[in-house]
Image 1 (cartoon, rainbow, N blue to C red):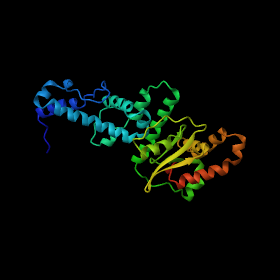
Image 2 (image 1 turned 180 degrees about the vertical axis):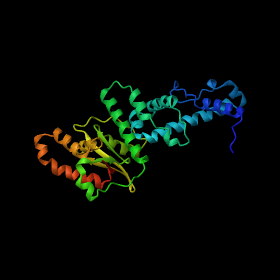
Image 3 (image 1 turned 90 degrees about the horizontal axis):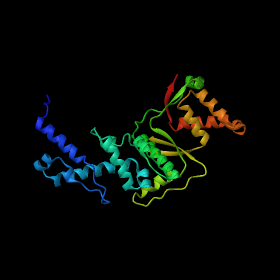
Image 4 (image 1 turned 30 degrees about the horizontal axis):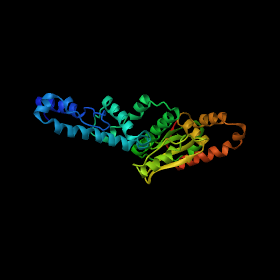
Length: 276
């Protein structure tokens, strides 16, 4: 039987936890601890300088976790500014669980809601970069599920079924060649990164985590649109909505293309089952 911790120990742990979560000072242009902000009794019981070591390690470890989770955004924004958002995030939502890999959960939404940028293209690129980083993180952490392989019965009533998306697959649009930039960043994390120009046409990608590794696949814009519709509607309704969005010229080739796209999506394990 486990026993409740002594009151003095719980009190000490609470005061120590508060101390190591003290924000690092940014005013000097470097991140420094501020021992004067620690609980005076705690500093007397231990040592403010020793607490400062844990204080810095706490924040640097959390910053490293976010850099790893959102590498493109960290390099595009720059570590100094990125860490400012990270610090605000962890003050608002300090880690509570035992798994440090869960600490970045929610950062994408926080970043999107608090991002300030005067240059509109730079803001759009940053919002897109955080979505791309989050998509990679999502598929990498997702459990591998058995792929959907339609039976003869499924094929006969396919138009009435709704496909269940695999949790290890994500779709992203790229208006700034950020997928390529992310690959370059991962190959050389210390390289200088400039904001890329906007592309004349968006690129569409599928990300998938497989037993062989994490893959990225280029998609046609209408193919991407179809997969987005299939995540919301039964197959027949998704196809009807796609046809309605197409031009007359596109509709002539649409039946054959949709057959190819659906076959490819099943082959690449985009779906884990069907719902009636």
